[in-house]
Image 1 (cartoon, helix red, strand yellow):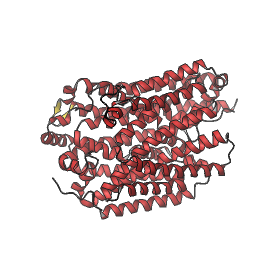
Image 2: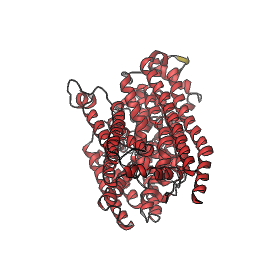
Image 3: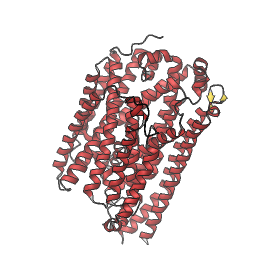
Image 4: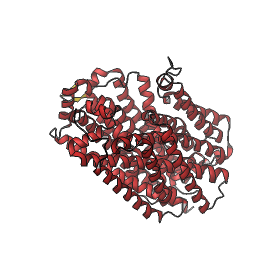
Length: 513
Length: 93
């Protein structure tokens, strides 16, 4: 086993960590002076370019789970990690062709704007806000728990201290800098993460004559040819298909991703931003594969599992082997920045649901001036920041991958079907859309509760009533069917009449008046 | 007249969106089902170090890139012009 300094306070890591915090606060200070209206707070004044938003989307999406988690999974189980890498990418063309442009043209700040367009505001917004908050809560738990564990491992801080630090730093820049600061922190982070991963991959490949096949062969020589073939991850095909559906369609229902499309000036820029995001995220997932195999060969599985059973430290350990403690410190700080930025995006989208959907549209019926909206948005941000810290501490020790899977299942079963039906189907009605979100979200939660993950793995029962680990295979079709049937049973003439006006705005991006 | 072509554009975009979404479904679930039902074939080596599964996985990522590239080029060429014409027509009504 190789010696490692992972888990001990590392001066380079702490230096980079403070440089990053100082840089984010500088961005926040700069952004705060530009954040005077709700449009600037939620949507960065719609002045972000397509390419910038592509980097920011990639930053929002490439969480620590993908950087550390997938690299770790590949280092321990080889080929099976690739199933996740591809699954997390294939949802992006769906976001591009179905959602991005109509969303930009029809909405203002949240995806509820789009679902409730031409329908009755109050019921649809309440349902959509609940769908948003459910996804945000599960995703936040995953990120905060991951943050606590990682920072504990990398800087030697206690888990609780780590969670509180992430919460407070994130709050500072969301609260004062709003979407402008969140976007630029996201862009900087995406650049650092891609740059760090690229450098790490190149250094790893340099040991193998710059040829990935030589690296894979070295892995096969050390741990057997099984590492290049599918292992036990996909044993039940139905499970695999169901998980795949959740990953593929869940991306198009993640509130913090959807919210990013409001930061660009028009539909064309929204389209370009997905093009950039897909390119960057795909490149990143290709690199995690090199990182995983690189860590398997150069660090060794024994050392990786000795530091962390789940393999999460594979990429930082590889950095230590290739570039010493200094490089380890840099990669650790990048991982920290990654978590911070994703948590900020999530908090902002949750705050928008609370303040824009629930307070301004439901409680105040749309009659709230800009000052009030901004104040409520900031109160909602503080509330969510506090919730994030509490959730992080309460759910200490929970399985992070499971929570992310839950968030994707809920997003794919509730938010995604409602968005597609509301955008593309003329006969969609208020009752139909409420039923889609409520049934899709609740069914996803219920089936997960009755799956073997909770019943057998957590509650130690002998068997589980629901046969699939991920419910998407059942709940996505169920949510669509419920939405269609309820809409057909409750015709809504006003919504039908408004469809042409909506279609016009969806294409032309301007009010029909 | 404007209304008619607007509907046409909506329908054209909808068809393209469905076709490309289905394409991604076929590509990704084809890959997953191959893994589920034919593990030995996926583990077969093309050259030492490179298994069929790894190559196909990289190809899934490449296909995702190709699909987004194709759609963006199509929309830039065929949708933006039509939208601009419709917007111009709409303002002179």
